[in-house]
Length: 601
Image (cartoon, rainbow, N blue to C red; front, side, top):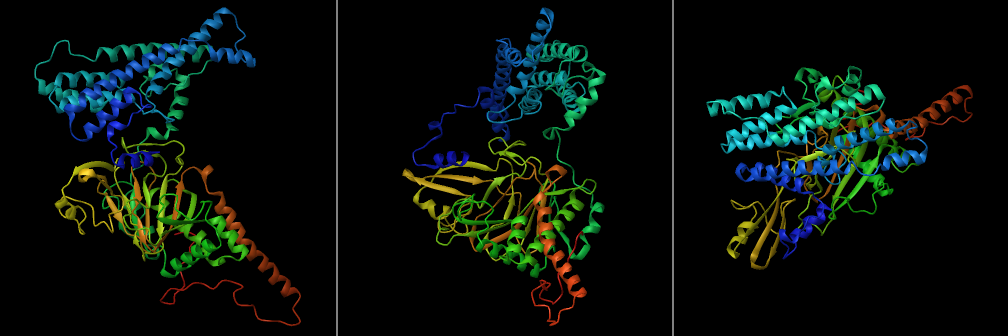
């Protein structure tokens, strides 16, 4: 849908006012607008929108709370199913009031959840107050900045950042201002919410009811001692409340990298991000050749991992071929591909997993969750004027929202993925580099040009002030359309944080979350192949097909061993030499040395 909207925006005669949003509530519209203005360092313009967002959020909470006192639909459903309360009048009154309080507490969660999303934005109201006091401070409104900082402390009395900001504002103001305190609307909200929580936790402890507190700021004193441990465990299971793990020091993995010629080419600092690395030397040229041949043979056998047709699911200008480890094993058993290649695919995937764990997670085991040998081939005759990417910017375990820069760890994203890896097999193609960028990488800029400007716009290399190249070979990811009056609209990706050129045996590994948005430039000539792997900390999401493929490939070996034993017991009357090809020959590289065969690094 987002791509369709972008296409409509590029159509001649279509302007922003042509679009009308029927889904986004007012508080989200104001919130997003305020964040966008803050991102452009326009705090003065952002303040009215941020204040509007907070007021609309509080109004939305009030509207939701009013709806909590409607008909007791849940109670009627329970009575129809025979599961309702069997008590008397007092029990019914208490049950109804508890349900009203539970509903009211959920209103903040509902207000903090974007349309179409499953999970709320954590700390939605305190987060707005933080942005407000910072924006007020930027424009010199120190009294309002203090008011909002004090309001943050109503939620988190020990918030060090808010305390430091408050002290800074006070020192700049000089003399204390009498009557300066937290916002009255926030004071009312917090006091009312705490009163309701006190009643609900009493009901949990003494009446046996249930209550899932939606707020992480609830004081521990309000929670019965018997419930605190369970609540702490529940909060630890929510992945969106935690920062991504920090990179491990060099001494944890240096020894592993030195094994068999594996070298660290770029670390997170050199890649201008976090939890990223480029490693070289994981494959020999001969091993790359075996896997390339495996991909080619599997494609000719029609194994495309369920992708309909021959076009890529990401662009109409490329063919996409995919091969899983189980499909490779099945094709090897059928004789359609080399058994040697299928076994090497399994071995290499384990090689990458072991190295990724040693580099990023030495204290916590990683499991393969999916392994995919993928090739992208540029379609001849369809590369001129191409303006898309081979793979759009995305994150691997969350839904990336480029409008706000947020990444939602919820379905349809593969939320259990923790680390990703791309092991490249070749470099004899044009384009196809991997790049890391910002979450809100795509910006739209409309400019009006004269005929004299066009050579500069489409020059190759581009002239100063322009980013597009010639009309025959535009930069991948740059979309440009000309309408009447030579109005040129450029949909430009921000400069990437880092870019990696594929080559045989090069691994790019990184954490799978919103801290590492990435994409692939268009493949404009040739065929680009890589082994894509995703790893998880959750053993229940380990790749079952990997184990099945390993067992399937071991069966012929067991049959051969049993056959050898039978031949030893009953010698053949007409012995003949073992036919060539019964066991796949070991692959040798250009120096004549056999490849590395490692169960572990």
